Image 1 (spheres, one colour):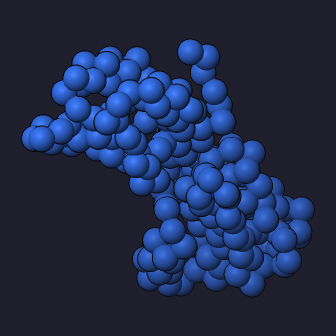
Image 2 (cartoon, rainbow, N blue to C red):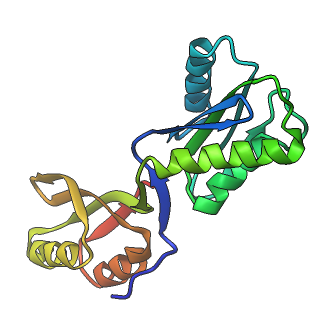
Length: 204
């Protein structure tokens, strides 16, 4: 079966950090996995506490590979000179479910809007380079129920489609809690359709 890129997305599983310097100013960049805005806010609060003397805590995040949501914040820097270039770095890397925060300590020399854009973008890019960008699969999951007459066919189908069996219950019938790549849904449903006493209830 041909591979599809429609059910994959890029992300990171481990945080990354970088320090970028320009004319005395220091830009501490942090990138990290995040799934919700609340998760991001927790990390932001931690870094604000850690860097309580810093003047700016600028950030951006991209979440939800199904329908990407994003946000950027300049935190007092000139409009679109901090949060936007941080977001641009995330977009250029095509990563999702990732947050980025860049903490700036002012060095006494103004960098100008162009200098700020370069600093915030570069710091974020270097933080991303310090960790590994990986490809994740978008998945469907649910419960497939069948009878013992079709159990071997179902298990063969699971093997063919690289289905992960999360849980199985073998009693009066056979019930499998499964997950699999979204691009395999049509194949799975069309294969089990003619099987008697076999149904798949999708949960996500």
